[in-house]
Image (cartoon, rainbow, N blue to C red; front, side):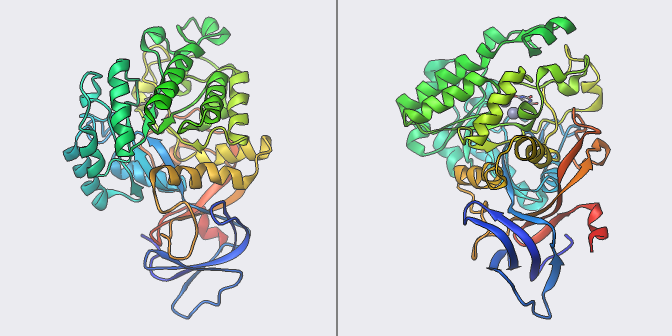
Amino acid sequence: MLFEGRIVLKGGHVVDPATGVDDIRDIRMDDGIVLDVEKSITPHPEDQVISCVGQYIFPGFTDLHVHFRDPGQTYKETLMTGTRAAAAGGYTAVCPMPNTVPATDSMEKISVLLKRCAEESAVNVFPISAVTKDQAGTELVNIPAVKLAGAVALSEDGKSVMDIKLYEKAMKIAAKEHIPVFAHCEEKNLAAGGVINAGEKAEALGLPGISNAVENIITARDIFLAGETGAKLHLCHCSTKESVALVLLAKKLGYQVTAEACPHHFALCDEDIPCDDANYKMNPPLRSKEDMYAVREGLKKGIIDCISTDHAPHSEEEKAEGFFKAPFGITGLETSFALSYTTLVLEGGMKLIDLIRAMSTNPAKLIGYRGGQISVGKPADIVVCSLEQFRVDRNTFVSKGHNTPFHGKKLYGKVLRTFVNGRMVYQNPDCDMLF
Ligand code: DOR
Ligand code: ZN
Ligand code: ZN
């Protein structure tokens, strides 16, 4: 930890959708909380002052969807490296998905994870429990018990619960327990064998395709189950234009439905896949250009509530296997803000404050995290960014996963410093030059 104790951030442009502030402010923090947010704060002699002139200050980002591979596949990522990668990406809270080995599927496993976090984690961790034991799709976890242990959501991410009767039962209990269900929507039988979006690119590369219907069918199923049971449903990684339309319909019907989209799905489309390079392979796959623009519009209009990364680290060797054999997923925590700012704000005309709503305010609210805002008395979970251009270099990633299609890309929006509970947990190596 580099800075702790009483800190004053001076002269930064604060953008906080929760309080509506979008102006130059000084911030004083101490003892883990925000003490003052004022137009001008006169530092006391014992205060450590960090100049943020020309920089932007946001409530720390919350990622509702990460894969940390710990326990079981720690050669890909660990709790330690994953949470440090999160800090480097400006995240102050993350929700690890339960598809570890073994799966996070019991009160005991949630408790052990949270205990480990207190020792090993750089940021706040809000675990997600599996819906079924061992994610086998046959027997429900003890939902009240995992909630009691600290799980903030239930998810079978990596697949869908295909037994609709069992999923209905899970949603009924989830509704009663006030715990949201995070849905990975994939019709398994229809997807069978697919590795890339169905279309011209799949044909050109001679690879089996995954159609939009694979996602749309289960998205519709889950929305209507949520409507019927009263469950809170959060739709993971929406990638099709039909998913965006279905989310809008669900909201119009008054269902408790929220949705997320991932930077790769709004920054890239299948036409951008240059060759058989598995760094472009993820599930759901990169879709058509039309889908990509629909996801952008969905975010801009607030139909899609949150930006999540689906941070899915894999080893170099695994990803070198090519599209057909390599596992699905890309590392996302350290490119998320820059991809979102560049694509949605600079190219897409979204307001910066609305982007921060999707990265901080909305996801924090969804899991009841007290961060996601810069207010007096609230946790000092804050990120300082510059909006300058930089070049993505995967060799500098804090994550063990270097599997990204964005290596070498010029983007705008650099994370400079991340504070969790008033302590600096990340400082960009370029910062020294900024003083
Ligand atoms: O691309 C993906 N990677 N999608 C998923 O649903 C799972 C994830 C993983 O665990 O690697
Ligand atoms: Zn998923
Ligand atoms: Zn995932």
